[in-house]
Image 1 (cartoon, rainbow, N blue to C red):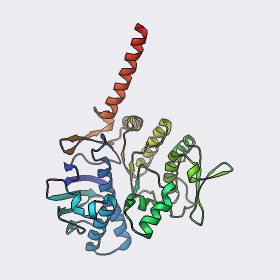
Image 2: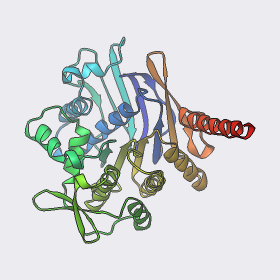
Image 3: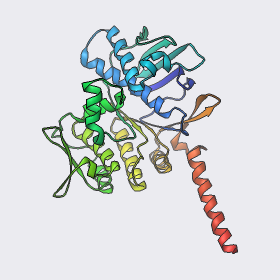
Image 4: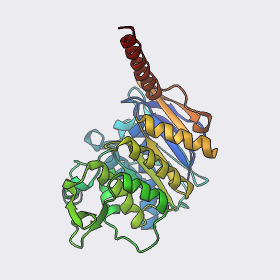
Length: 344
């Protein structure tokens, strides 16, 4: 789907370009290195293409759609696009290669709500899904009330779009990857999600029925993914963006979720995820090595006031990074404590 991305002067990125993207792409870095910004930029572009396909309108309309999507995904100050341009620079530039076609756009520091320099091909059949760290089921009504009813910027478009995709009715088709899905479902309590005709959301476990607030947040998050598969919002044309999938999950479920994301990437769904979890990162590295897959690792770090990226292939092993370094540091401290106790 997405083959390449080059950006200049986008938020804390002065420049970013590197190796071709893969069916599965992992973004790591400490806090405030731009992981979510990178995911959201990719999502805003792909989702704009998806919405453009549905409207079948002329090219200038796509520029308007993209500008509005960037506004509502990032919620910049005063909703002005110019605030996405890096401090101390004058112009943001983006070049994306998607499905063999090139998409380019740029705007300046003083831009408010229009993108005037844009070129792209409309021959894209894509679908974009974004799973934020926080699940949406417990705040479903709040998202609808503030964004659909009043257009108050309390939630960005990653939440509103997910609500709209979630509400689509389930189909009667066969669920993909039943085996791995069963393992993941088992690890999170084997709860089935049910959406009633009145829009209310329930979890069914055996003969018992629970509302969303009675179910652990990690299970709610998995249930969202389950629903998107059942209503075919997540399909072979999809690019799936997952921001910190490990939040509120037990390590066993983290590993199983990593397995599941790998299976999705094998079925034609392109996956992008950011993570702080050693369990998720290590499991994806193991899968890349075991199956000889060219998964891309984008490692971000702060250099002065900007974020810089290095690119690695997970099948070649994990490069030095803060996640591994902290895990090693904890292990070494454990060894020292054990040795100290033996001396006593």
